[in-house]
Figure 1 (cartoon, rainbow, N blue to C red):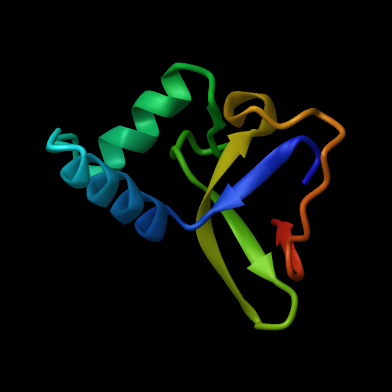
Figure 2 (cartoon, rainbow, N blue to C red):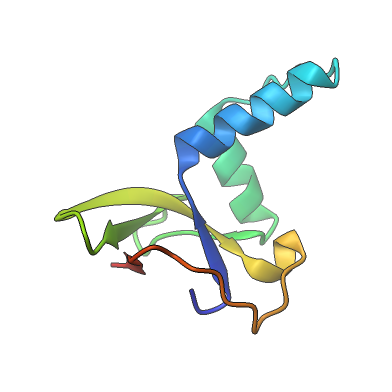
Amino acid sequence: MNGHTLLDPAATYQVIVQHCAKSNNPYTINELETWRDLNRMGFTEASNDGRPTVMARVTAIPKSFRVVKVKNEAIGLAETTSLPLDGMENV
C-alpha cells in the first residue's frame, strides 16, 4: 500500500519471538517497545497521534484495527512492489 506493507502486530511479534527462540537467542523486548524502536529507526510509520501502529480496515469486515505500517524498503521490497492486501486499506 503506497510503499508500505501492513502487518498484524500481535502475530508479527509472535513470529519474532518464536524465531529468536529457535535461534537460541531469547527476544526480551516487549511488543510495544518493539514497534516504537522500529519507528524510531525509520522502518515503520507512526499514526498521527504518535502511536507506533496505524488504523486499517478490511473492506470485507466492517471493523478497523491497528497494524504495523512497515516501509517496503525496510524489508527489501522495491517501492513499486505491490502486494495483494485482501481488501485492507489504511484509515
